[in-house]
Image (cartoon, rainbow, N blue to C red; front, side):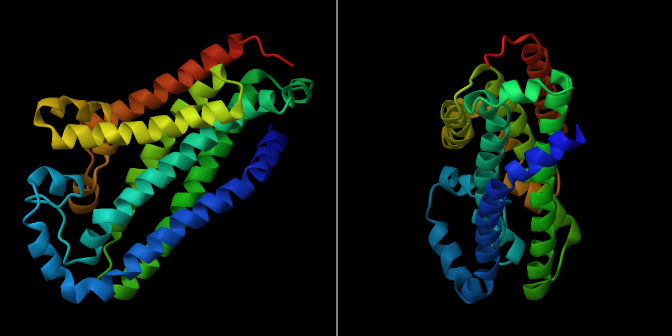
Length: 267
């Protein structure tokens, strides 16, 4: 199984580097923009005070929300959202393709001819997904810590939670995408479905935020579970939301194992 993990890691290294570069680049840009806009933030706050509360809530700027006069509040308004959306998209593509591409590329026959069980294949690929996502967020934490310490008073706990939120979201999306990948063998189809899920759930979050009558939809959007105000400002994730995320991960993992072991794999 060690050879499988090593081979799969190398196979996905180029994609990891590309997505990591995009996320890290945007993160650096968002944080370093704060000193340039620091003096004009008061004008921005005055302008935003005329916007509807539902619009401000989307960016965590409603009453009791993020403080734009701090570097962390500034980053939480927009940069944190980019981390969630782009990181979630990467996790969805990684998780969906890591199983389906074996059948799509016709390499599953070679893989199954080796002295390795389906459970070992699943475990090995799941480990690669976990390594890639963990490595991305560890590097992000290091870079963000350095930049925040350079421009403002460094807050270890806040920086840590800024990385924990996207990490949990990415693991959940990857788990769901792997489950979807069991049933769809065409890489493009399963990737499109996974991306649609990632973006679709964000629109659910928007609808739940701007429409009071549909407020219950927030329980169906993982973006609500790790929203900027809770994570960046309050350093917390509600126990209920954390439980839902862990439950989705567990159900997806068990479902992937159950159906993959019973699947009639075409070679």
